[in-house]
Amino acid sequence: MLTVPNLLWAKRQPEGYAEAAAAENRVLLVLERVGEVLVTGLALVSADLNPRPWSLSSLWLALSFVLMLMYEGYWLRYFRGPRTLADMYASFLGVPVAGAVLPVAAFFALALYGRNLPLFIAVCVLGVGHIGIHLSHRRRIRSR
Image (tube, rainbow, N blue to C red):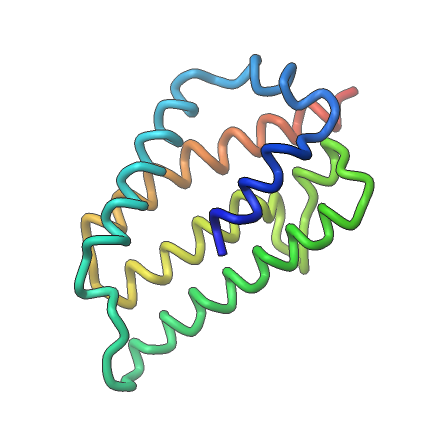
């Protein structure tokens, strides 16, 4: 749910994205990349994220899934639209900069479901970098 839209986007980047990416804050970029590697690795190897019998904590898993479905909806809207920079950093269903916030929030909920402190910390690192970059891009677009 996370990888396929990003692979499709790599071939359908909006006009002006390369220039925006060149101006990204290097600290945020490092945090984003480190967070991506840590979150991906921890999500793949952490046994405490596997489904288990229903309990109240299962609501975190359900929330994570709903947030990822919303993320898919965000991408469907992007690919069906004109695919502009403004579309990239738009809100979706009331979630600002949804392309960054929704996957980070989904992994945050997953970390809570698994009571996985290392994943929680990695998601925080990813969130600062990824959401920070998206907010700075959106700010540049709006100031034009």
